[in-house]
Length: 269
Image 1 (cartoon, rainbow, N blue to C red):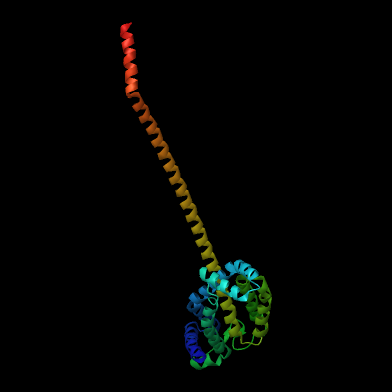
Image 2 (cartoon, rainbow, N blue to C red):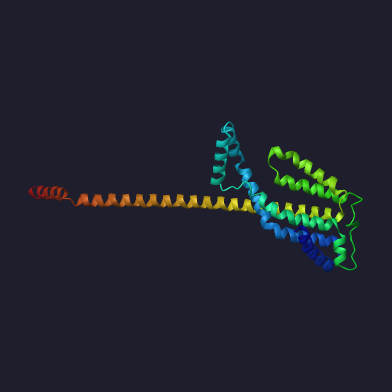
């Protein structure tokens, strides 16, 4: 399966190389295509991770409350996740689907002779790097490690995982020193795309929250205005009722009799 995927990816990489006649640009374009293909999965993964982070405080309360009853703890936790529509494997499934694609890309770029077999007049150079060999200046490994750090910085929020924020970039730096520069360029570019995607998602979520807040504020304002209008109408109705009662009081028989008596008394005089 991985070999078949690597073959298809090689076709795409070869197409881009023949289009731009530059191995480095072809790798960057390939990275863009892979990110576009896996974008829906990446977004689902990020959304699932964000949802899990949001419910962590409540999960900790549940764990503290039922720490002496594991069976009850598992049951309450599953019920809580079901109520909040959270799948604990939601962040893993998209990653598992993406993983074979990443392995295929790595396999292809670790063996650059595969592309040399499918294209003529192949040049492995990009700027001052030979992308089929490891970077003798350590520039790309350092860039890849720095990009990985910032990528992790955006993703990791759990204090218990903060150590990975520093360990993983160091691992990337160490292993990248021995990898072909083309593979390291792919990793660096992929990290940049991931950072951009994460920031765009964050901006989109913030805009949704702002729109939702504005909508709620507008609905409350309309509700207040409606209450005020009802109060005004009720006040108007009360005023009319008082006037009607006053008129009716003036036209009442007692009033007429008293007026007649006054007129009679005036005539007698």
